[in-house]
Image (cartoon, rainbow over all chains, first blue to last red; front, side):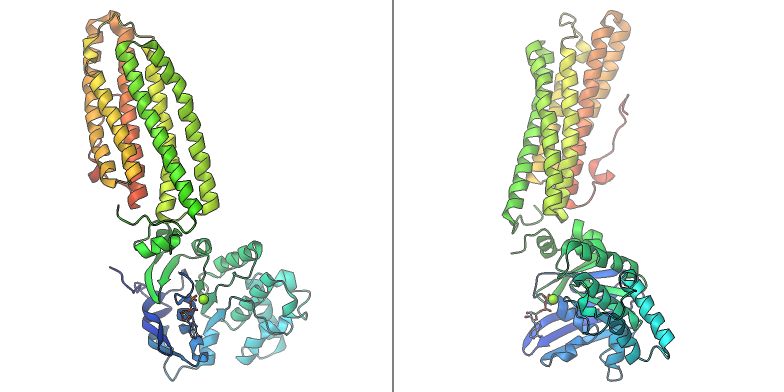
Length: 261
Length: 236
Ligand SMILES: Nc1ncnc2c1ncn2[C@@H]1O[C@H](COP(=O)(O)OP(=O)(O)O)[C@@H](O)[C@H]1O
Ligand SMILES: [Mg+2]
């Protein structure tokens, strides 16, 4: 019996142990343990409200920004407790970047959107190096060819799919180790979605990637590991191919086959 | 079975699956009837019945096509997962296998007119019993599908040995008979092929059962569960 744990990796990038999250009196996450390694894209699936976003946000302490949220349990990045008082949260969020559901570029130029984080973190001592970071990030995000001639245009003038890739470029620019994506394609059309999915394939291995998606086909397409969440617990975690062809748990099966009440 | 059969949130999907199960039951039933009809036609030298079996095979072919189309459509439109997906893949494979069973039955029926009823060949007396055992295998395989019964599927595979044993003894008896009665070689060869066809039908019933087992459990049936596969003479 697996119950709420999925902790088999030998050398995980991130580890969560018995993580609980409360919003005031209400418990949203009820003891989740999981290992996330560099080699696999991990998808979180589950019905809306089951706690996917809440749990994802514990991985880079985004819940700190929600006053009533309280997190218990241990989460480590390369073995280091990210909730320790010694942890620099700004630094943590550069190492564990996040891409949100709705593309949220700053109302600034394409260039500045990508350069922003690198400047803050002092990653580029001069203009030439900053240019290089911007270009590399846009190339990796698959956006360079589409924007290289208009880097000074506003980021908000791009199409939705381009904006989302810009946000991914922005996350990449600060040289993260982990990228968290919360339903990154839910506001995009199928072509823009396919581009993001292709991008996720290309980024795999370079970064540990966790993606929350309500689209099971997407989870099946982009991830190698899938975790099914239900009512604040992680019901099942395993190889994506197994989860979608032969899930062990009845609740997983009911959800992925569309029998969920 | 080993899990609940709750309805899908999307009711039309349940409708598709129900239709598909109905089609599988129909094609399986027709294949079984074809085997039975072909053998009755042989026993009674009933050329009319033999012709009906040959004609009826067209309906089996049409059903196979209908099932294939429906499976492909359902996969494309409903994006099935887990046991739903496995059932659809199984249905697709089963329809192909049943079509082959129909072909073997048709082949038996076609031989009826070629065998002189005046030539009594006692060496083939086990053939009706073999046909019964084979027909039962087909029946059980489709019952296993309809009931999602993995245990019955395993039983079918184990029972296939009976059909193989029948084939072995009929094969030996017919060869011995033809050696000492060269004038019976024509009819004897037809009977030999008929026995072979029945043996192949038994194999296909086990193929159906293996697909049922996979659809229900998500595992492939292992050698131990299905029992040893005895090599029949002339088996390919
Ligand atoms: N900022 C918040 N304040 C209070 N409750 C919240 C907050 N965010 C989420 N919740 C609650 O926590 C539970 C999990 O929500 P969430 O993590 O957003 O689920 P999911 O991402 O799976 O849809 C829900 O019951 C939700 O109402
Ligand atoms: Mg969410």
